[in-house]
Image 1: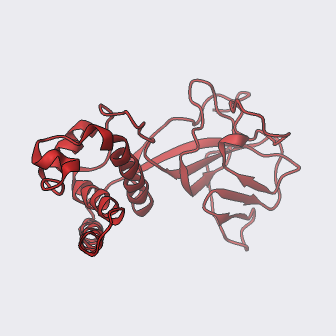
Image 2: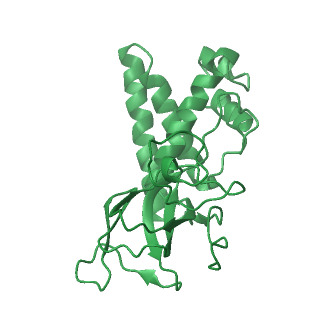
Length: 234
């Protein structure tokens, strides 16, 4: 679904009686489009946090001086900004840069292609995830790479990205619309709007529960930022 198609769906549906939806005319008022795209980005983040809709990978090079590895763009080789001497341990490339789209670490694979058990203090090589975006390596092995598989967020849609693709399963479109409507009415004054906001939030949760209960979502896997050749290791 394109953003422009979402505008039509909103205008002819939940916003059909509002000026923001041009009274059902099939589009969103021009001066409100950037705001609705902002709500869209929040809704996409919520859905991609609730469900593993997108998975990606990055390659981390261990460093003898580090035990905690926060997987931030500031730690990527291709990061263009200043970072005050922060170690660049994320081994990305210009063609496949790490964009900071990580929501949660899901798995870790060593240089032999074997999965490493996470958060097991009795393991032979304990690795921990004290935070969703932090990997703790108790005994780092400098110079050896790890592949981090992670739950990824939807790409952020620009305020003028009317032709951008919204990449979610069709089964979650109702939830997406409900969350946008919830945010829209939440930011309007008046008791009636507050009640409508609560109704749409409840509809969002109900739609998500139905999708989850019926197992209607399968995550996609992105191969960006991953398994590129690194000093002879692929």
